[in-house]
Image (tube, rainbow, N blue to C red; front, side, top):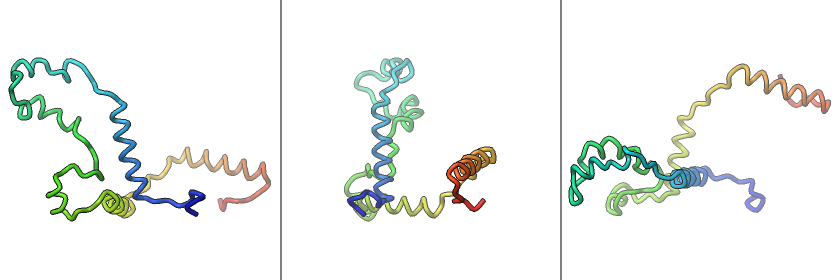
Length: 133
């Protein structure tokens, strides 16, 4: 089954998703405009100044901060205090949370009707009855 590629690992899916999101973020580039350049802030604070506590930084840092859920960004000591969980362990835990809490949103009636129409048409065309409705 492994050789035929018909096995599936939910943890690997979540890890791959995080890597793909990071790649998408990187290739998306950096927005350069008057606000992101913040030349007024640079002039006000100065070259040797401290920008972290400046209001401009405070209101924007979350937009630029890494949004990783699985890749640990803390120190090694903190990682060890929190149980030394590797990325695979965290991915399996996240998969479990998703399975336990995910709620499927029903499709709109118009889409369900269109799908039913397609299935009915295929069944009639091939003279088979696969569905129960």
